[in-house]
Image (cartoon, rainbow, N blue to C red):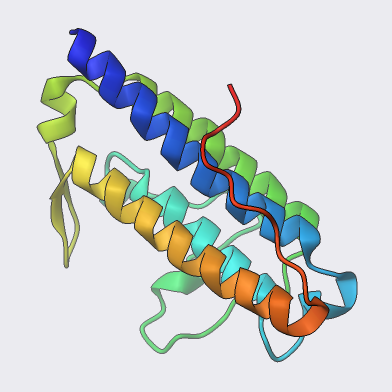
Length: 163
């Protein structure tokens, strides 16, 4: 039992830090850079949408919260019908943070090994969490690069989630 508590604590520490880094990048983006050809807003939404999806215990029953749509599932790569605001995406990110925290707190050795299955993936719940964290960090790196290129600044590294 103690081992699973240590694993949960480590997972939350790093997953929460990844979400914090995404939040910091979103907050640092100047208003004039939010909706440009670099698609800062869209990459922020894309990352948050897939974070939410990969945190879903039953991916076939996933529904994003309003006002967000299923546009990310469009095979043609169609973007949402409108630009989402920073506050909308930050609220969505907070939704994901709460969902992740709840999901990770409930992990047991059995649920860590349960399967997360969709049309293209068959992972354990532990592995989908790690996959999700890698996806978040991939896009945080993109957003930080855009910030460096446009305003010559980027948020600092977060090594652990704040308790």
